[in-house]
Amino acid sequence: MRERRSNGGKTVRYAVLFRVGSKQQSKTFDAAPGRHPDKHAQAFKALVEQFGGTKALALLEADAASSITLDELAEQFLAWKAGDVTPRTLTDYRRDYERWIKPRLGTRPCASIDEIDVQRFVDDIARELEPKSVADRHMLLHSMFKFGVAKTRRLVDYNPCTETSLPKRKKRTAKGATLAEYLALQEAARRVEPDAADLMLFIAATGWRWSEAAALAVRDVADDEVMRASVTRVFRRDGSYALVIAEGEAKSQAGLRSNKVPPTAAAVVRRRIVGKGPDDLVFTNSVGRQWYQQNFLSRTWRRIEAETGLDRHLTPHALRHLHVALLDRAGATPAQMQRRVGHSDIGTTLNVYGGMIEDIPDAVLDSLDALLDPAAAGAVVSGAVVVQQPAASLPPSAPRLDQLDGHAELEG
Image (cartoon, rainbow, N blue to C red; front, side, top):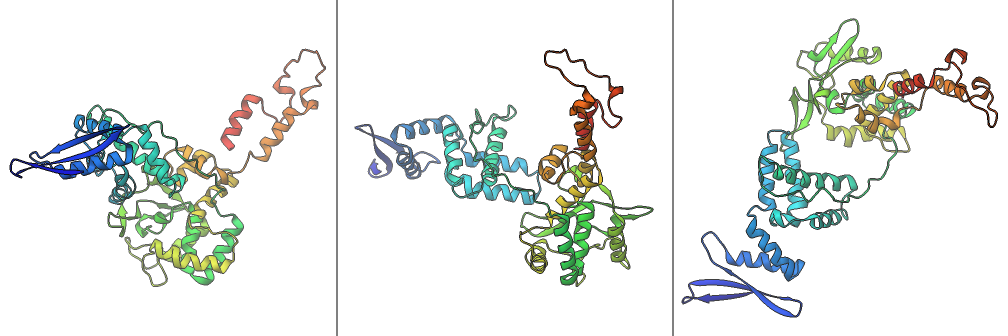
């Protein structure tokens, strides 16, 4: 890059020299109101060094055609999302953009970013991040372009993130605790930290998230014939990552729910609310103060795990998974499980917790076996025409095939 002056040194230009094939070329950047020729020249020089002269010129032309850069699109997108998400989520979006996307694509004009650039970005960050984290950052970039191409905005012409190949996620075993593991954890907690044992029992008995159970107030407990507890608030980190109680909020609208509390857990709640006011927390630590999740995980939970000597590491969320497994064992339907754990979509219940749900019940398996039993279906002779046997001639326990499909879906 060379500096050139004219008009007695008053006019400054910068020329970037580069080669296209064997031919040397140059691109000159002039001073103009609001422009900084040295910065533009430096940016073009960086493009030449990264992509070569031909693509650098194409990117420069795209910059002239579209004045909005990815950084500018990001600012508009984040300002728009501020009305939709929590301050903590907005802070996470901004952090991820600044850390992963901005250094690679931020100064580029949006019109110059194509599918190859996005794929290169994904492949680059995949060297440092797990597949899920890569997918999350790609989704942020995808959402920004989707925001920009909306007909109500027309900030960019198209979304280059629709054909990206993302790294495959590794399949993991079910996260839930087994009943034996839970009992070992509960026994250890009674010795190490009884107040934590109460909170753990409530989570296992209701399937609530830690952030929901730890924020339960006395006013949200209705103790009639059957005790019910309602999720009306949660512990959440704000934009500065401070732990606060968010009133009237949950992970989703379905998370704001009321659940029956089983007798054993109900007895614990009754014991804990004696002498407390409506706004007091049901579950507190040994000195009567609110639980802080990070302290609970790093200190209390770690001590409890160490006391059990379990072979694998678990988290309090494993008790929520255990609850789904116990519901399934007790005969609850998927729809009932979904409502109890506060999922908006039954697909989430089955996809996330499916590993904890048992195979078809024994009664259904016996019925299936009866349908496949030659003695029940009638012997089949080679070359003979098979006539379906009337349902009345099947064993009483064996449903028709059309009934079996519906029954299996209900129970599974």
